[in-house]
Length: 319
Image 1 (cartoon, rainbow, N blue to C red):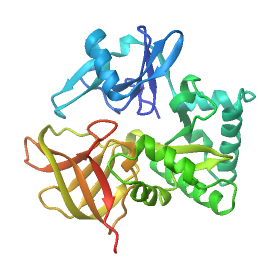
Image 2 (image 1 turned 135 degrees about the vertical axis):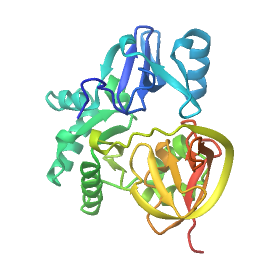
Image 3 (image 1 turned 30 degrees about the horizontal axis):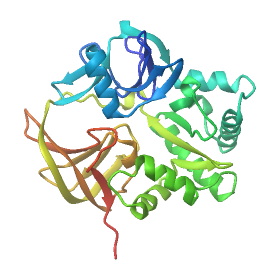
Image 4 (image 1 turned 180 degrees about the horizontal axis):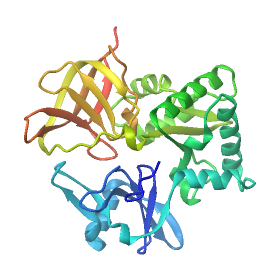
């Protein structure tokens, strides 16, 4: 699953000597560096979670070596040399370790039971890892369980298992409180009703005894399409179009092909809009227009920052 020459995958965490933890976001190196975003900083012996704005400000002031300007994608993100990584936190190893020992707290106990339930529905649990706060042992009582599933087939089987487990009351759909909590963290530019409608049909989030869990997909090496295009940003645009291919709707990044000759592709780098639309549906999209400098072909990118302010994908429902 992991390449020997570049063993880093999205959803991994990498730690540096300065007390910084970055979330990996890229499958491939960028000028021999690991594409990532700063998520946690050491503060008085504790890990403190920070947002994109705080992260950029901290790096700009104190650790500019981790700021990266990609000429290929005309974008700024964070990047770390493999030599600067002191600890590589790998989700699949973390989950394996957790399952091999007794649970240390209520969240870990629920994680044990969740994996047991998924396994009972035929999910290959060796294709699952644990990311988010639990990957670095920073979970609190109200923390979510963030699972990562490696490979498209394994991910769709896990989603189906979640759907079946909800139908048979082994797991629960998100109640209004958990959905509102999810909305406050990730709602972006949608109103609550729009957000909840889209989320309820994805089956990539549910609850186990009142604790929310999430499943995210990471592609296997053979599923990753290497993008050699060079993109130039051309401002923000909004369009309406019909989705003609949703096979990569849950990938990272999520990819939708649409019936728009000028802009045939929509990409989402933010988790809010994975699985957002299905083939045959009309969507409204607001995002950053990127143009391939060689061919002139355009794409619309949602999630140029993690918070994706002013950017969205939503289905145009019949009134």
